[in-house]
Length: 358
Image (cartoon, rainbow, N blue to C red; front, side, top):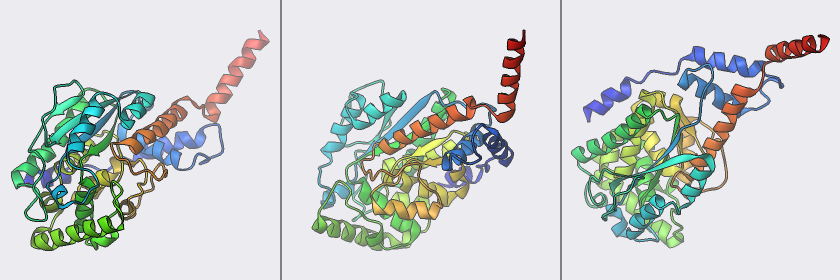
């Protein structure tokens, strides 16, 4: 666990000179200054991460981390854990919502099995990295051992390192795992030290009775493990999930390798909150794709002091909101690279005038 504390502390903040340089170009382009609002802020940040005169956003990869949860046995979801495997099969066969969105933005989808309770076939889009067949039931015992936590963090880190080596320009993070909104709410409640009542939503759509039960399960779990929930890594170990831990490792790695990453909804943001509490600098490399309908997400974004690129009242998961946000960022990159500055426009007009004079 110590190695992850060390890694998190070695992340440098964004180079402000690149940020200011990018903002200068945006200010000089042929339109009223700051007329594109927060899109310009996103572009300046993107340039500062890549540290390129002309940023590029061509190779896009969506990483979906999948795992089951022992707490599912407490009846906190409308669906049984078998749905996790079914949806992973749907992802790799190209039939899910995220596949349609990925095709629209020309992104590759890679699914990482860190803890699905079932055997999955070999497939080019699937990475077999199973740590266990679901976590333990954290209402009764820790979700995972320290060794399993370390492995999960490492899976996320390696996926980002591979993506960097393969020259991807941006990553989006998503997840799949029945009962993972229960784990995410427990992680967020533990990290923010707030009542589970405030940060627990309906997930797959449980009714009022189901929501009360879900909150009670989280409350009892946090009470059981209270003495050990003294750091984000311990919180992940005791009430988290393999996929949440893997995404925490991935977010740390994105910051380490200067690779822009777009967050999806509440489950991904629970992982981002853990990474943030290890080192707030990670947010320099993160784009918040959208704001989920899950109420815990608002608490996390307030903690981050960040606004999402989109607000569409979505609560699907599987990187759907992040994929849509990549389309916005890609539009911004085209604007940054292709819109002339006033000086460039004058030079072009001057050349055109001279050509007519001959």
